[in-house]
Image (cartoon, rainbow, N blue to C red):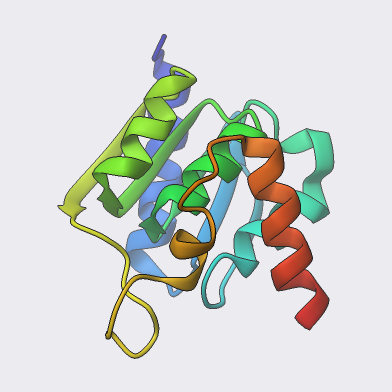
Length: 146
């Protein structure tokens, strides 16, 4: 259920995403827990690693919400999500766990860096629907490059 506290935190993360170059932000109870900038899914994975279980119950703002981000939201047990752009698939995966979302624009899919096709993370998770499996796969692939 969406209450005023959730709406206030959604506005907080929206303001941060809309007025800065931050890629992902996590907030809870009117406080920013963490914000990161960077490309792809790495900033979200960094926030999960940094916050651990403290991310549970937070509100996430993500600049572009695809299936990978949605599965990470479910994995992190967040309360709600804001994104300027999201895919239908991403929203569907949030709905599965009853996670409310505010989205400004629906996009058909997330493009890869050169714009020639599907984002590599979306492609990697094509046949995966488990948040835990998605987290392990993404963390193993992305964080080992660091």
